[in-house]
Image 1: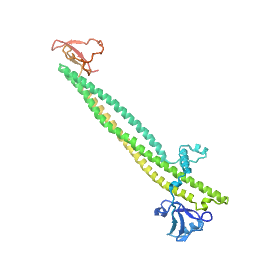
Image 2: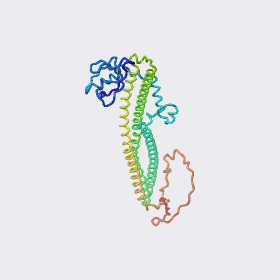
Image 3: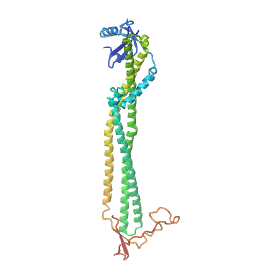
Image 4: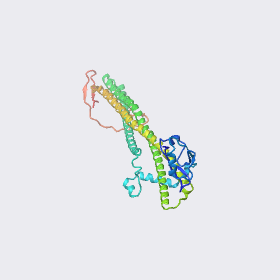
Length: 385
């Protein structure tokens, strides 16, 4: 088999031309013969004035080798991209989103479109994008709240460290210092966790903003090529039906009598559209497979990193907190000038430039006990709660 189908021939058309070239055949591997080319000779014998069937028999009776002489169809593909083809592409796009019953009731067939597995995978890709979008938003919110928590730990640690410096009693000094350092350490541990979480967020964001949109763009190009190919197929069928109807009426069709150039141009455009469609389909299949593998492997790896980072922080924070057990209550000498600050230590402005506008709030009298060492009244403060 040569691997071609032919059309035209006596008595309707003055020439014989190639209609289609099949894949994985000698004609397709040779690569020069294209749809729409005019066959002039078979094994150096002219086919002028012969019918299509006579040319087919001549080719089939050539044995192992056959020599075809042909004239190339010199045509611009843009000439075949007519308004009719554009409208057919629009029709296919509309039918793509219709159910079969709706398409049938409107007299539109979608059987050739409804089983496209690659377009269905695009819907799955959109669901994955929603999953990643929600996951990225959740991690961003989680990091924001953790940051606020760590900042509070840092501020609390700074306040208690300042109180410890001003405390004269050794026991209270050590307790406040330890309490402040614990909160500072928890803040440092938290910052380490945020540094681990940031690359996770970046990796998920890259998958969401680059990998998925790039694949969606490839799928859209594939769908556009598919609609173009289907439009040319439909145009060829309409022209074939027109030719059959004219023949049944025993009338002549001008475009056929003059070499059927318009029909051959559409055949050439259909072949080029099919080549483009096949290439894009292969690219889409590879990209979707790679994206599925990355989705399964990447999301599992990133979630493991996230859970490990949070678990490590919780373990280290719990360890720091357990070291505070038994640290309080402590005794403080309130008669000393430990808390007689010139300004409120919790305010970060100069008291000479700003008046103290904070209202005085009465509090319950603290429990006082005599100090065994100084004889002063000692105040017991319990910070364990």
